[in-house]
Picture: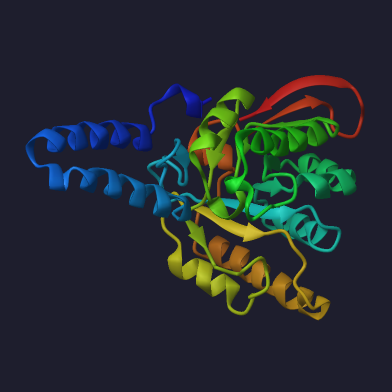
Length: 281
């Protein structure tokens, strides 16, 4: 497993020390300029959360490091009885393995889908309890409760995620210690179609393929489009994406292989109840 987020000094912590030291120096040498380093630091703290690839507050894995032209598939916001079986069918058709970053309250409602995902050889990541868009504005206690509650529900399906993807990829300074305490790594993404949670599916495949680069972690969604009539169009877009990747001989690796670190542990045999302790890597 990669170094946990709490074991390294973040960019924010380093920059904070430099900014305060520079401000103190300027206070005695150019008092009028003393606030500038602090203002610069505060500005970065404000904008950094909105850049999912930037590990400002904590180490963030947003792309692979294989040295090859491989990519990985990830699906957020499921599971869903309308979309998850479609994705599993298509992934099986092309023999691709993916990571599903699931919502805790949906996993609680549809535990059989978690079982189906893992039974097909895919992995599970923690994507918060209910995808609260203001989660990163909550205090540390609430943030930890949200993540732990999801971990506990997934444990009931024999799954222990080792990776967490914050809603929309937004982070904050408190997340670092929470993930360290829970033994989780932050994993975001480097390629997305800006599909707004499958509310914008027109040309979805083309938008991904146009942006795709080696070692990309692709972000897609495990949500049924609305209205439901668009489900068929969404399935065609995903099929087109997969078939084009295959046609282009684009290597698609499981996330754990792309990033070189385990993303999930199975604590029991899924679907049998037999005791097991297996790490997916």
